[in-house]
Image 1 (tube, rainbow, N blue to C red):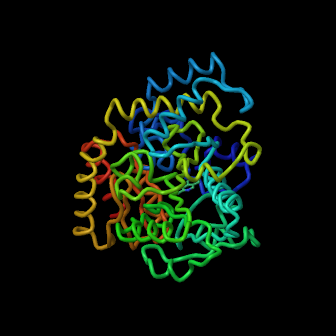
Image 2 (cartoon, helix red, strand yellow):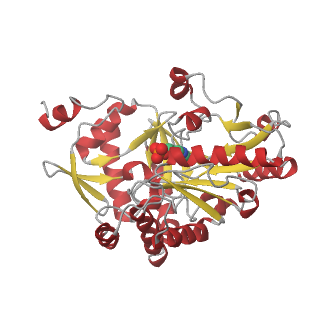
Image 3 (tube, rainbow, N blue to C red):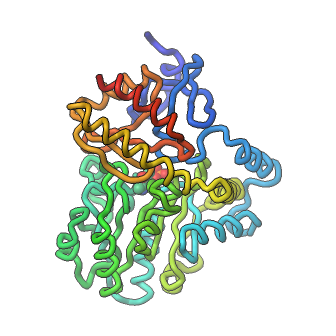
Length: 393
Ligand SMILES: *Cc1c(COP(=O)(O)O)cnc(C)c1O
């Protein structure tokens, strides 16, 4: 059947997305509805973005009120929401100085520049980045340059020079690349796109040690795994291993486009100075209202506590799938950021899931990724498992 709404959109868009044949219209809590009124249980959250789910009234009201007041100023002028959002975000992410961007890719871009600027001020001559295989850091040139996946890189080479790739969770492979040219090591504490791969405790601690011993900066990219998803506000806190620079985006605005990179005071002292970096829209009043309100709701509703309460149930139900179904071979991940390795073609499973009214996304390594809104309850997990079983049958 030809869907005319999809056809109309396709005519004018650049075809860079493999979209599902669904036209979404509105959402409520854990559910999305298409233009025919069909209901979908959402275990994708728009790529781990809508942590608070859809139609969060309190957030909607705050955004509407800010729209009527002011939603653009440029960064030549202060507005109160900017300072408040920065203070709150620093408080929950454990950093001291934050710069607001419009996306995750831009946050990574800024973090890389901040690291280079730190080395430049110090006059160390360090410029190389060590990144991880199977990493994903976004689509801008700098972000693609540290992304450890050839398909995202090759068509755009030559990329930013000075990037070397180590094996994730293999400290020796990192050590082998460290030299007096190394400026920063960048990693996701829990790799998302690359297949839901959780860093080992020893790996995180080992990287921190290497950085401390060599005046190298540790950059944690928490664009996906941050903001409550792994059972702590930011994943680094769960490891007790603090980065020097932290990137954030996705869930911090619940879907309002906003990202950020933040750093410790010690890094800021030597890093970006006035005139070094900027973003016309970055941290505009609307984005900052979203960040401020999202943090407020997260804390009042104890979203992190809820994740810790419900995640073991997701783990249990997914482990059961591994036991029950031959086509499911492994469960991976932590908190409400988990995945299963399946032996069936994912495109097929995905389209059958959509027929069943379930939205899930994939990750590399034939992984089905579960990154639902963080308000998911046990009954939603049960419903997801039932639908997924039918899609895998
Ligand atoms: C999604 C993602 C990005 C890129 O974010 P955009 O907002 O799409 O630019 C960067 N890093 C990680 C870990 C991500 O998951």
